[in-house]
Length: 213
Image: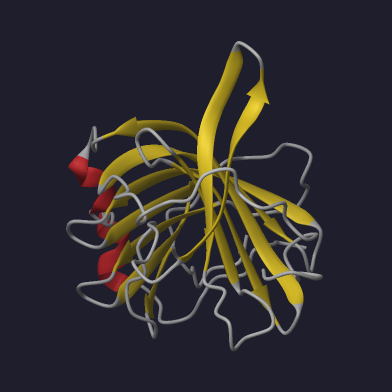
């Protein structure tokens, strides 16, 4: 379970994050333990803007670090592409322009929230993604509680190795962001990706605009 600060993002009856679910064929005793270090890619869909943001990701749960490298989409004129380095033990985030290497240093205001399934999560369902001969079994969890009408988070993780597949967040009865994960590899191939470039020694204290237009 993880909430990000940069812009790219039930019980019986209607749910803000989807239609009523069929009863799970199997129940889960407890959430699985997600990997603490991995690299991969994600697509984050912002439901308020209708835009997808694609990025390569390095995730270090041991040292509470996250590096996000936005992927250049040629069909997005005027858009600037950034590298983000989140260092939660220092409570700072660096935003680096991939083209100019200009750098902003922003103070983080929310605590580290890892990509995992919290121990107090509610088991929702277990099913296969795909079809016969080509599928993966996953579990779906949420933060739904009996006293609350809607969940605000739904996470889908693989059953075998507990890799994140999708996380969806909602707020005020509306879905805000949906993030799909893929091409995950365990470990960090280059720990230096969490080290800001030298241009960040004179970083500005304000976030850079996402567009030149």
